[in-house]
Length: 462
Image (tube, rainbow, N blue to C red; front, side):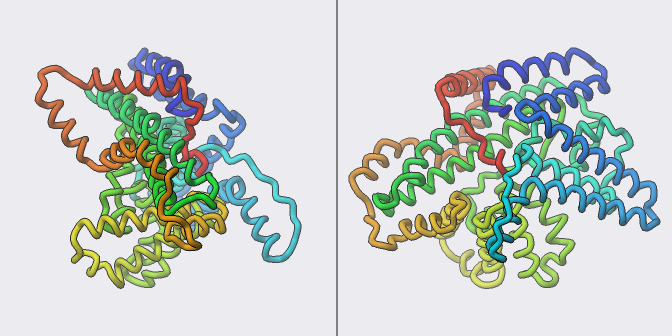
């Protein structure tokens, strides 16, 4: 089940809200959330509910052991057990086929590669439960003595399948003492409807348009067409993932939780480092706090630390060399900005800094999109005119003229410009326009969902 489905919007969510607010008991509300979350998670693949519950049991138990035996070797053993078990689950389901493929290639073997079904959300809830164990070990979080409350943290459906990565320390107090109110619920509805429109109206449209270039015949692809295709994909993945994060944050508010932001208009950045401080912020902060800083951060062996983090960042996104290359590409860019040309970049006019970032990001999205590296390199060659590719032709011109309004609209929505205008405008009216806004977005999204067959969430496969 996905948020941008009619089943979720008109059946699952209303029923869950009625059951949740039909009681005033915090314990019963927690139970409703747990049961509802497990139902949501098991909608398509109920067998993997057991894996998530096992993961919760593992880290709940290890957290208790760390707290109880804080001055003995058992504390260290519990942390190691948590790391090994969780990463073993993730490695087996997500990377086993990738490992066998590479063994076959290196040693010339023909071992059978069995593609396993990837449990939805395993990349996210694995990191969430690991962060809990780490924080209890380091004394940054109090241990949760109630397994049911810990299970609610692990299974909480808004952020379960595609983030943001919610750390236990960020919602520990809300698990025990959250106070739901109408204002917060209303803000949640607005955030959810806005995120859904970003996904259904912008991301889905951009995805269908980008496929015309990215999946077409390269023999007829022009330079302008190649840049247009990857630009549209950049819009798709941003509005898809940030829209999902908006919906997750909005749903959290409806049930009394405040999740941290996951995006902060990343395409207005002026450097790769700034881009990753604004894009998928929960993942970036996870690797910073649990990998980069423990390795030594900026203090020692910075290049090694940066490359390790970005190797893991790429690998986290998928079991394929293109994701690893994509991660290492950003790691190298960020290192070079810090050590080589960052000061020069800062002296350039802001426009040139933005152009540098946009070109760097679009090149990166090519690595990200094509799992076949040879195809991705061929596409990059066309973008830069290698092989005699035409700069533009009549077909590309027609596509551009037909979709220029959408491209401009998506570009503007990628900045804080319209958001600032809307905030100021709504404040000038005596009536609350949020209701009108929410109803309009809900109706528009519903109409499009009824007629659309293309409605994937890209980050579900990561």
